[in-house]
Image 1 (cartoon, rainbow, N blue to C red):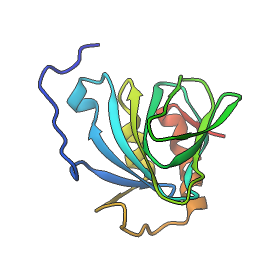
Image 2 (cartoon, rainbow, N blue to C red; image 1 turned 90 degrees about the horizontal axis):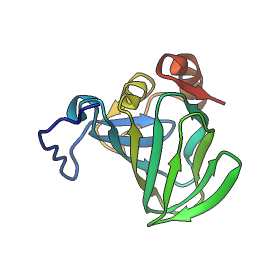
Image 3 (cartoon, one colour; image 1 turned 30 degrees about the horizontal axis):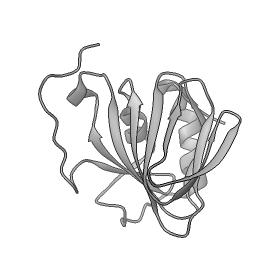
Length: 157
């Protein structure tokens, strides 16, 4: 796989923002930017929110915690992590995360190879920023994730 040779610069506040299960994911670099090599996102996770347990069958996913406290489950391992921590969730391994802190959490997340952004675009809602209300109940969005997940190699457990 060839990585695009042109530089990618995504300043603060730029990038498409999607609301997914109460979190917001800002796209920083996607498939067309990287020649399909990887996608990167900034995840903003309010207190008490996070991702349901799931498996990626196509991509590895990494998380670098920028702020907050997140309970990660990767395979059989459960651990609470804070800013400066790193998680690698290989494809095929169940994983999830929940903000167990009292303040919002943020991660810099990478999916290798690219393409996960297409799943987020289909199941999420394009919003202006993290404070934009979303017109769907959490349960309905998780149902939609289960329905369309197989198309993108994502299995919601």
